[in-house]
Length: 369
Image 1 (tube, rainbow, N blue to C red):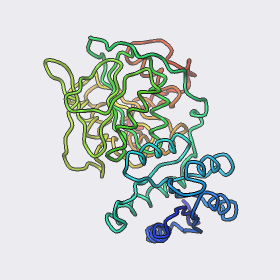
Image 2: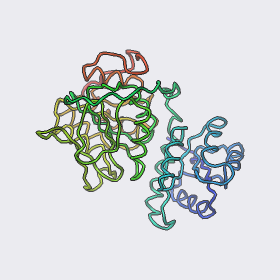
Image 3: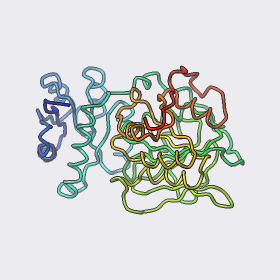
Image 4: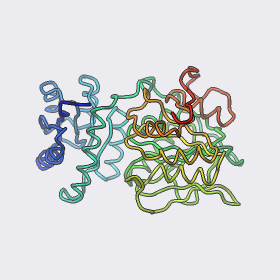
């Protein structure tokens, strides 16, 4: 258990935000704001001087902007960074770039400084605490991505498995790694809930589609589950999978939040269990909290396969840990072995893009463990 407060450096060119962010963090006694900086250059000097445990970083700043500052932080003073992002399309684009460069997570700025302040404060405090306890970046992601391949035509056949993935903090990098290592003719259909705000998921799906052999898109109600296709749930909506006579589809809905989330991994996983039974594969990857744990339990109950990402390969070992502790994960799999595992489950005993994986990277979990 941590005895010393988490030391936070706040970096923002707005004098108002340099006042508001420390006020939000001050409501939690386990966090101490040790300093502020108005741009990237001052940020680097303050890190050397104050040795913070976590940095909050605005991305749109004059002089050295947030992206350039983040590159230097990761190179010179690796420390968990939580970026502040605007709700704009440009804001989403630069935020995803920051996550790719090693930022821990992001928080969107309220459009009105006074609006949703309490909600923003809760989110920020939770992410600061998670960042302080996290691994800076998964060891596996330092190997780079495999060469991009051409997209294959969509298969007319039905998928042999429906893979429902729930993921949160650390997810953008982990998903990019996993999906880039699955072949374009992957025989299963994949549906993903990534905890991310509205407006960010479309750009995230577009980025994944650019770097992965699979076809990736932000889901719309009625989109068909097809082999080699990945559907990303839009931010602020729930996604379910459904069997229909003319084909298996995803359905979006605006039901209340589950576990504090919309989209919720529990909603997706529960629908996969109900509709696809033994054809369902539930996967929980890196993330804060316990969203998806009970959904994974439903998949296991209905005879499907359940997988949790291993602790050593997670940025935050929250969601997988919750499922493992409740006895819902049949297998615990490292990120680097996940592609091989999914191929084997879908009946493809071949190497995914990126090569083979060590046999010790996957392990079965005894019921009740």
